[in-house]
Image (cartoon, rainbow, N blue to C red):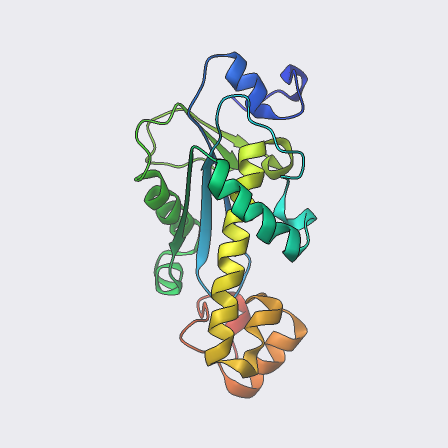
Length: 206
């Protein structure tokens, strides 16, 4: 059953589940699902009971500088945090959704007996046997999902900036692997690299 927003007794969903007795609540979000280059990153965060930070929110609503500062706060103050990934090879071989599940399962393998998973979006993890709740726009409704989105986004952006040093002509440091006009023009001129998701539709005809 999806979460009923009317049941929220405070700003974030965690407060409702904490009031029900759930303690080890894992927020999960990804970065790079819609990109055409680079790995997929997944953040997982567990905060202490009753934790709150006024600046933690959906990473898309923050500047790069704000995300970097909050990244350090989250890794310092969370009970648990992890960033896992799925490689470009896995994305090309499995498809983006199955690769996403692979990355999530890698992150969850580091957590012992979570009480509840809060997952951004409509998807549930097929092989997971515990309690999980998909939350539409969860990165705006859940503090731990918002924090997970920041960890995933910052980690992926750092990776793409490093990748840009080896492939400066593609502009990975600017568009982070998404299908911008600049990126598509570079693909037409130079062709795909080993870091591109060549099974995606935009590569047909290149």
